[in-house]
Structure formats: structure tokens, C-alpha cells
Image 1: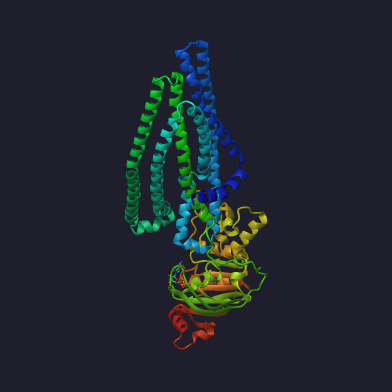
Image 2 (image 1 turned 120 degrees about the horizontal axis):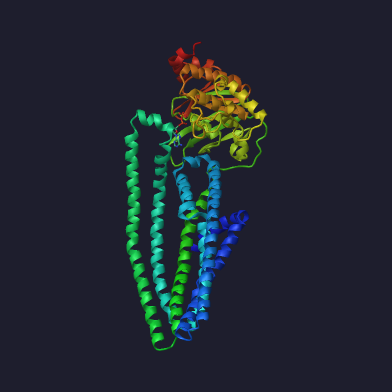
Length: 594
Ligand code: ADP
């Protein structure tokens, strides 16, 4: 089981790391050689110096030995430091590389996972798992090389010890088993704490980063929310500190036991080697050699065992990254080609509940949308209008029933091709803190042809006047994250930019999901009217809890209580006795009778 995690993680990371960063592995290998040789220099030369000192006292020979030790230790130490520095730099490269892969994955996972607590937790575990918990790729490769170094050292030292004082090996091994057990328990405790921390970390980063984002500034100030934020922050911060405190409390007694084991080992070896020396079984030189070799043997064996435990621990953290990267798809994806259109859509006996909830949000929906049709979906807040669009765009799949495009279940189509059919402007659309041009084009390289397109589409949505006031034109940044002179567009301007982006996508179906909710009814009416002209022959869906969009739409679907309660043209519905639409229209008529 244990080996599986290590193997799995290595199988996942090593091929890509080797392909991109061969130099890293070469340096690791050179460092392995240096680290293996290093402990043998004093082990081999110290006894010679001691025996020479108590024997012939040949100054030249003694000087030579001393110089050999000093010079080789200096060179080996230098090389070790140099390689260490290079590896450090690789470590940063790895971090950037794997973080960028993860960001890419976060942006492409099935949308519904972004609203799923388990998936969000997994993202947090993955982020931490691949950074400081495991030390990243360098962190999972290092223990392997350290273990190899230790193994070679152990073999060499065993050969040296076995001929002179073999019981050293026995004493060391017994006490090593004890300290390995203690160490294992310490690792387990650490891991449990880290797992609990991931949840707190997510809340923490929301408090720390998102809320200090100036876009929350108005609400925080005007609602006096600072106190609440700081209190919440304090609570979590106390939990955070408490957990770390508990961790060190649990670890302290184990650390103490570990030290006692070390003392017993030292005592046993000094006693045994001392006896051998006093009874003349070994020379003074060999006595010192045995002391050093015993230390090296113990340390290398310990490094070997702990290196394995360390590797196992790190592999487990890194595995959280692998788990996220391989996170199972939330919705089924097909391979069918979408074709050019025009497209007909049909909802058939479709019902839907959000994942993890039994509450039906939509019930038995039957609806057809023909090519070029303009459909208005109206209903009170919470009636399920946005949900219907999310289902149509395949951000979620129906719980029951089917949605068809051109007679084929939409789940059978190639997902990306299918997404390209739609250009929605969602209620909670987001502009990026990039240039206006990039916001419309959604690409960062633009030709002059592109620039013209952007200007054209901005003109269509009525942003030309605004553009004229901006010295950098379409290159002006939206928001101030990147540039001092970025603009802070008004709600209406943001909507226009979002609509421009949707129009520029040139998709066969455009959807306007109440992006105008912040506007007054007349302004909303105006936007829908203009948009309707711009949309032209494309299929369009307008969603609103007001009726602004209805008069120029071909059909109106009135959603209420999870269902489509009324369906027809404006003329049909407006005169229906006791009809929901007729009532809504009567109540709001003042705005629309132009
Ligand atoms: P509308 O667009 O008509 O205002 P929605 O489609 O946004 O309504 O919401 C319909 C219902 O589904 C509401 O009760 C809402 O609380 C619920 N809902 C919306 N999004 C989610 C979600 N991600 N998870 C669970 N319930 C949701």
C-alpha cells in the first residue's frame, strides 16, 4: 500500500520532470557521489594519523594525512554547496511549472466542481501538498537520492566495522528500530494536523486576500463590516494557532524519547569499543575509527529508514496534487461533432436538483427553441431561470430527462465544440483585470485587424464615447490591479463590455441572463432592445424577472414554482385571464408603454 503511493507519485511526476529538466537529475547524481565519498575521508585517514601519533610520529606522513583530510573535505564541501544552490534554483522552476499546470487544470475542470466543497478542499490540499508540505518535486526526489547515499555509506561502513567490532552493528540496529517507530508516530501526527489545516487555510485565504480586495471596500465600509471580518479572522486565527500548539504538544514527549534512545546507543557503543581497546583487541587508531564509523553507520541507517518515512510522507502530500489533477469528471462527455447549425434545442421531461441536494429546482421541463428564435424567460427570483441556462450550456447535467440539440442528446457532443455554440452573459459575469481589448478578444495577442473588430463591437454596444475619453483606447486596463491608470467602469459599462465580449464570440446562440439587474427598468429595456438588434438572426435567450425583453421576443416562457407555467407570444399571454404574465405585465406596464 505504502509503496503504491510512492510509485504512483513517481510515475506521475518523474517522466515530465526528466523530460523538461534533465540537468536537475544529473546534478542530483553528482551530489550523490560527493555525499557518498565525504564521510569516508575521516574514517579512513583519522586512524592512520592517530596510529602514527602513538607510533613512529613521522611528521611528514602525519602532515600529508591531515592535508588530505582538510583539502578533500574542503573540495567536497564546496561541491556539495554548489550543487545545493543549483538544485534550489531547480526547485523554484519546478514549483512554477507544476503550479501553472494546476492553474490550467483549475480553469478547465467541470464547472460544477467549482461549486463543490469536496473539490474545493481537494484544490487546497493539492496546492499545499505540492508546495511546502512536500517540498514540491525536489522534495519528493531528494529523499530517494539521500537514501541512495546512505545505502552506499552503510555498505562501506559495515565492511570497515565488521572486521573489528561487529557488535556495533547489532547495538545500532536494535536502537534504530526503536527510533524509527517513534519517528513514524511523529509523522502520523503531523499528517493528521495538516489534513485538518487545509479547510482552515481556505477560509483563511478568503479572509486574507479576497476580502481585502478593494472591490469589497464599499460594502465593508458602509455596512461597518470591518468588525465582523476581524472577529471572524481572529476566531480562525485562534483555531490555527491552537492546532499548531496542539501539534507541538503531542510531539514533545516523542522527541524526548528519541533523545533517550540516542543516549543509550552512545553509551552501549562507547562501553563496547572501550572494552575492546582496553584489552588490546584493537589499536588506538582503530578505536577512534570505530567511534567515527559507528556514528556514521547509525546516522546513515537512520537516514535510510527516515528517508523512506520522509519520502512516504512527502509522496502522500504530493499525491493530493495527483488526485486533483486526475479528479474524476463531473459530467459525461461525448465525441460527436457539433456541425455548423442552425441548431434546434429541445428540453424533454427534464428535471434537475443541484448535486448533493434533493430539492428539485426544475421539474418536468418541456421546451423547444428553434433556430433564430428569440426566447424570453421570465419568472420571480429563484424560479430556476439561470439554472435552465446552466443546464443548456452543460455546466450541469439534468437529473432526469434529456436536452437535445438537433435531435441528439447534448451529452453526446464533444464538450468544447458544444460550449462554442453559446455566448452567454451571466448575471454574475466577470471582467478580467486586463485591457479592454483582451477582455473582448479573450486572447493576449492582437493584430490590427483584431483591434478594428474590438472597436467595432465596442461601438455597437455604445462604448465609443467612453473610448474617446481614454488615452490608451482599447489598450486601457480594466480595474487597477496591473496599471495605475486602469479604469473602474460603472456597472452599466461593465455590462456593455461583457455584452461586447459575447457578441464578438460570434456564437450561434446568445444568452443574456439578467446582466442588467442593476439597471432601472427603462435602461434595461433599452439594453435588451439594442441587444436584440445586434443579435439579429442568431438564436437568443433573454432572462429577466422583469418584462423588459418580452415585447420583442418571439416566445415567452414564464417560470414559476419549478415549472413552465405559461408559454406563448406576448400577445397571447398578456390577455390571458388570471395569467401570471398578464398580472406581472399589468404591475410593470408603466415602464414599458412607450
Ligand atoms: P433564477 O435565475 O430564476 O433567479 P436560479 O436558477 O438562480 O433562479 O436558482 C433556482 C434555485 O436553485 C434557487 O432556489 C437557488 O437557491 C438554487 N441554486 C442556485 N444555484 C445553486 C447551487 N449552485 N447549488 C444549490 N442550489 C442552487
